[in-house]
Length: 197
Image 1: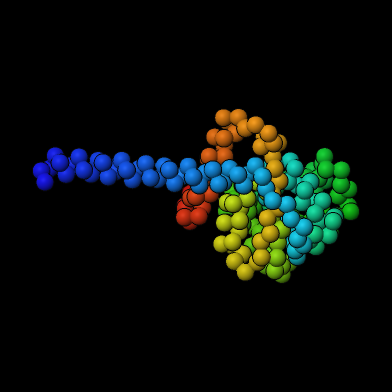
Image 2: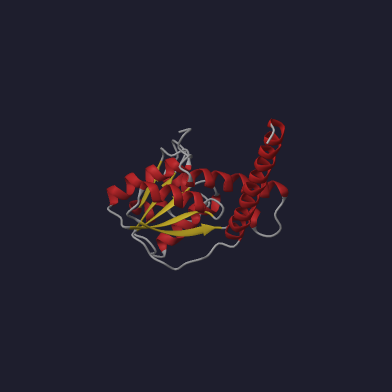
């Protein structure tokens, strides 16, 4: 085979591999999208509950689960520095005094990997064996991946919150956000999420 023929064959192989990777990414994204827009509800109970902040409904959901007795204690991970419980619960209709003894605010996490590390320290402190995880439906796969690394012996129970943007017809912007999150989850699965801190 001549050098030019070999180069042409390599180009064909590279093109085929790229198409196969793109098809695999797209098939996976369709699966990911289905889970993001139709999260499963559950009625399970656990030792504790962790809320990964980032959406207004997540905190209200976690506090409601706590009040329902679905967990004994609650960590709200990724709270902004300087925010106290009253500020965090503002708008939820919950009296901070009624739940203060059972809620811990985590101020150190600034990423999903950071949420997982913050949760691991809290789980060890509270001696928990099971955990309800509250976050947005599209964020749940990556959250569970990172948490499973940080607390491998803890049973994780997902409780996904469906964000308003995913209720009904999705815009191109929303699909772009979901595609970005899906790619970040793939990177997390490959152990690449912590390379940049």
